[in-house]
Amino acid sequence: MSAVTESSVVEAVTKELFIGGKWTPAASGATFPVSDPATGEVLCEVADASASDGLAALDAAVSAQADWAAHPPRERGEILRRAYDALMARQEELALLMTLEMGKPLAESRGEVAYAAEFFRWFAEEAVRIDGGYAVAPNGTGRFLVTKQPVGPSLLITPWNFPMAMGTRKIGPAVAAGCTMVIKPAEQTPLSMLALAQILADAGLPDGVLNVVTTSDAGGVVEPLIRDGRARKLSFTGSTQVGRLLLEQCADKVLRTSMELGGNAPFLVFDDADLDAAVEGAMQAKMRNIGEACTAANRFYVQRGIADEFARRLTERMSALPIGRGTEDGVVVGPLIDEAAVAKVGELVQDATQRGAEVLTGGATVDGPGNFYRPTVLTGVPTDSRIAREEIFGPVAPISVFDTEEEALAAANDTEYGLVGYVYTNDVKRALRVSERLETGMVGLNQGIVSNPAAPFGGVKQSGLGREGGTVGIDEFLETKYIAVSL
Ligand code: ADP
Image: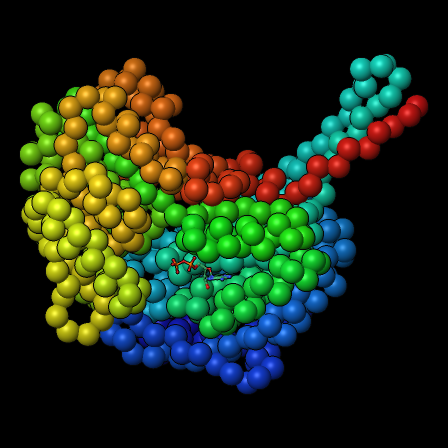
């Protein structure tokens, strides 16, 4: 294998649309640039689809659907399994590609490639476990046959923060279930998805099953696909704001929807917690992916008895983190995705300090090129601050103090979001009581990371609809059919 260099990994990707098993430029010939957020430099240009290209991709998905649904589940699973092997074999070059377009440190990109691949391994195993039923009707004479069928052509829309894993988390179950797809990756990070498409094709995925459309005009390409009526499903990961808009559009043709939307995760630390573990978990929950994760701890609520010590230790850890380009050895904090992200984080910090919060470390950008913001700890953050209400998506830990469990739960649940909450306590009764009462789809109980392909990921309230991963993940791409049988 040739040496893995920055230019070689970018060069190796075909930067065109993938439609019906063929790479093709946008009909208009248009392209848009993809940049390195650590330097601002353009890495390459990729095809910029318009609505007609999107519809051509949907044509391909629709044409392939019947054959694909009839494909033996074992073979569908084996394609995923081969793709898993290929992803792991090429982990290093894919990690570098991801770091270049997204900014996260190489170690985290390697972790994401493995996490992304794991969805393929998991759903390779699930493809052959789609079950059904046969039952005697209550009247004793009739019979019920229940079987599961693929939903049909599916539209998949993914964000930039996990450019590969958010794709495999949808593609894995769709392939396993027998659905064809049109996927639109985020415009900031299309390269990982283009590389993935080639890997799946090489693994034997038939032409037309997965179609990839890159575009700088997400709304202009996606809305006609939804309104066309032939797609039967939309699976979206992104902001709550765009999710709401897409739900409205999907109502038009009554599409099935799965929505992984924003979060505003509370991180509760009780006096009886193991403080070392809580600080370690806080670092993971806050700093994984530079804070650019919907699961990121957004609000820290710490019980008064340990609040000062927790803040001191967190500040010590946060201020020691090496900042830099994700390709450099030892870097833990890469750049944020773009200038707007840095500006938003700065505004949230400023709003909190104007309302009385204190900056223990950070609170500023880094001079020079790239979209860097320093790891930041704030204390005394008033609950009406913007930072307590909005998704930060950056390396800022706002801490507030509480006295009672009731007070902590009320604050934690005082949000329109409900993706994940984190709880640190050594009291088993409290642990379960608080976990049950948190209005979230997931809880990290004495642990700062919840994501696992074998577990059901998803939120309640305005954090989303449906679950990805686990044994229920494939259901998002299956319909239940009931056949009433007369004997
Ligand atoms: P973020 O703010 O994290 O970029 P978005 O919700 O804007 O989150 O983006 C998530 C995904 O949704 C991206 O692929 C983006 O291109 C896509 N997207 C953004 N706006 C629209 C839209 N109006 N219709 C369809 N997809 C959209």
